[in-house]
Length: 270
Length: 348
View 1: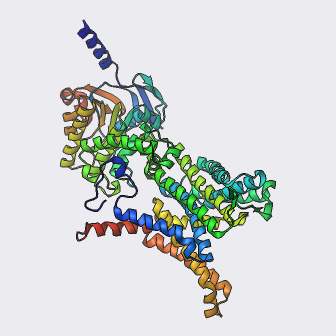
View 2: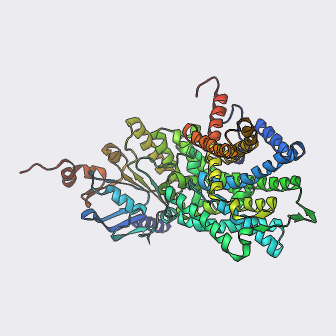
View 3: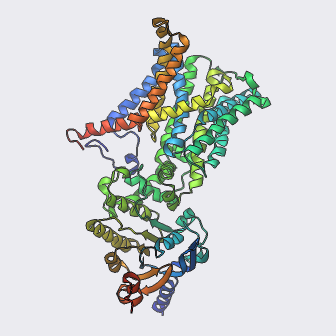
């Protein structure tokens, strides 16, 4: 009887998505970047968004992340309507994002970059920081512990005190991921994490994404061009083409979907 | 990075300012020298040292706003002036003691600075620099024309007193400034290495990503202005008690530019750099002022006016040279030297 109750509650939580976009519509002048796009991201799944160039993947990502405001449609985050919320409000609600290219803070060390991710969980006021000893220092040590856990997870212990500006691209991406994890997000959006990487770096990062999911049990939304990575990592895939959702399903299905093949490879004229 | 054999056993030890025995010894010796200075140097050098201490407070504030948060501020002298006038006014009009007027002077400047911080929310770079020049102009206009501040005659102050002791002598004023400077500098280190300091740099380096981290970019920028102006105000209040006379022409755009020069020479984004910059620039200025007359004697044909004009040209040249050859300041150079010393004989 008890077991049954647990099962139903689990089913309910699986059914209500962590992040849901409903009928997003977004046009830049005459170009429709998103046309009535709806997606669901459920707890503990990795959802990939793919599509040819110009399909609207990044626009969708920017809508979910709060950078763009869709002209129609709404975004629900843990059941709450968050459309129109600012970027830092969304971050505080538990949404973290890694960037296409690198957006790490080059003037800070690796550790400090990750500690920036802790910023919103810290409370010390300017006056307490001025005094340093006492509250501010104790809080700093407490959050340092969390940051060190992430440093361990991402295997960047040896460079923790190096300024990020002096690091290579692959390591910067790892710091970017660590910084997002430090926010203790309820969902993680990753915008083309593999772009510009060589095979080895891609394998490394893919391994870290798997590790992170194992350790944190958070849903991940991945926008990615590298089909190998997507097919290996994703639980479910959404395919966009010209701003429209053309397919949705597990990787094996998507690979066989005639609409997807048509979108990527075109169709022979009859 | 640390020299070999230095390791921390707790997170707070790892973020401590003084990490090695050598650093601790240097700091103690340095502080001892500062305390002993009034008994060693003559009255003129003592006065210069006091001005250096006051400038340090102001420059450290500018370092937080411009060096850390990346907002160019050409109005730091105006913020300092607001602090000086506020402290002078509170002291003469209401007879407040200096331990109230100095922090309140800082607060007055912070409010004034905050208003300009709000404009920094929408503009950056050159446009922000122009807006802060407006602070300079507004300061000049208001304090010259408002009825409470003595107009062009300025404000005269009574000396600061504590339990019947009046800070009149050069030595006592030096110690007053030293204590305030040490407190403010320590506070700046605290702010710089905490969550606010990191947020300032984050907003400077990449405000989009900073927003994504849950940092309120608007608020952070305004806070940086507020803190920087508070420091300027405290410095201004000290100045008011040091000179015991406040007038608008003590805080001109020219002075603001010198504060910028100090943090450029010392190194952007480092509290220690600001202190070094103040020392180097002030020492250079004073050297020229001292050497100027003997220069005129050596070359009577040049005339006094030309020599003093050339001094400014030379000082400007030094700043330009720094921007070209050492744009990241002396602190950066020092870090490179320190690193290569620790790595020796390996190149990296």
